[in-house]
Length: 350
Image (tube, rainbow, N blue to C red):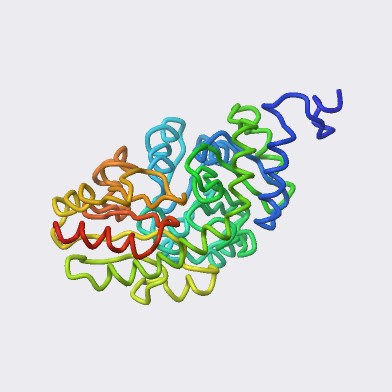
């Protein structure tokens, strides 16, 4: 009876809790230096649990204008139907965040680095702003993972991940997790996950726990390659621009060095020939795989405007900086020389 009343943490029904899932939740909470974790059936499950907990009719959210496509489109296409107000701003511009706050703002939501522009936001400054106004700050930490960045240590109230990405690292599960800084937020969010029914399958939790064991090895290898590949692309005559926090040319390079433990494995770039040349590049690669997702052992390349962010309107993509020429690259653990050779031979055909 105590278990069903929520007075005991016994295992009575997998939608409510499960020992394998619980182990993963507590492990991820330790890595994020949080109070506790809540695993979900997908990354979007985690996003919507946060939205459902803090948003409602008459409430307002300040959201990074450049986030994972479904994280924005679900606000514009679904949550707007229920009277939720939203402001999409560049959260790497602190003044833009400050100026967007209203009396009814109930949540500040951002990704840092952002998907797919790889812009970096000043999490400590935004977290301080949120506390001054009594507004919880949630950071999607998928691009970094807890190995490279711990937003709760930087002042954020909530951090979430798509476990599908670098934490699992093998592209063979779908899952998400929410970690809170305080017991108060945990006790608000966990019942919402249970009510919505977006619980994690125990076998997915087992596989994510397996992938977690090699997280530092995989990230170190991929990040070393990413630094070299970013410099290679930046110097290539057919590349118009490269966005990677590890490059001094990145507008938030200094901030990245201050709040992150490394520049990560994600970058974006554009070709001088635009969309058509980008298509030639993607179709000419032999080692890099044309696919969505990121953070796995394989190097993945994709075109966000026609893939991950296709459900956004052209206006929303433009406002979010998801230009038609933007190509996103997630570096894996393959041999770096082979990856650069693959990109070089594909660029020769552009």
